[in-house]
Amino acid sequence: MNYAAIKPLDIANGPGVRVSLFVSGCRRRCKGCFNQEAQVFDYGKEFTSETLQELDRLLSNEHVEGLSILGGEPCERENRETVLDICKHVREVFGNTKTIWMWSGYLWEDLKVLPVMEYIDVLIDGPFVQKFKDLSLYYRGSQNQRVIDIPKSLEAGCAIRLKGDWK
Image: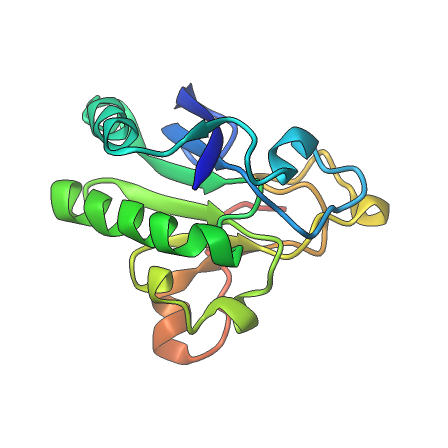
């Protein structure tokens, strides 16, 4: 898997200060995508064990609340295994002291069977839709996207929105 960028102190993609990993590769090609260059699977750098060590170092900062995984598309078939390995690793190293948020253009209803769901806390799901663009929304670009509490959703068997002031 390739990745487009790592933002070490990101305050835009999830609550608090976060480390954000932007994976490469997306077939959805949403009109108006904010990260079009990351739609290409071979864009950026290869994710290696050294990259994982760098994530560990960045996440070790006591001011960092967690990891945000965006794209591109983390749930594309080509990215799933590495994204799962990253999430498992973060849980093994940091337990529940760091949250894991993930963005996907796919819906939770289609993703709920993926093993990675057992490791993430919050999923922002749904494609970016230009006609529903709303810059006042927290953590998402269009009104059709949802901020989903994954542990509660897995328990309930349906998408449960994260409680909070998400507009």
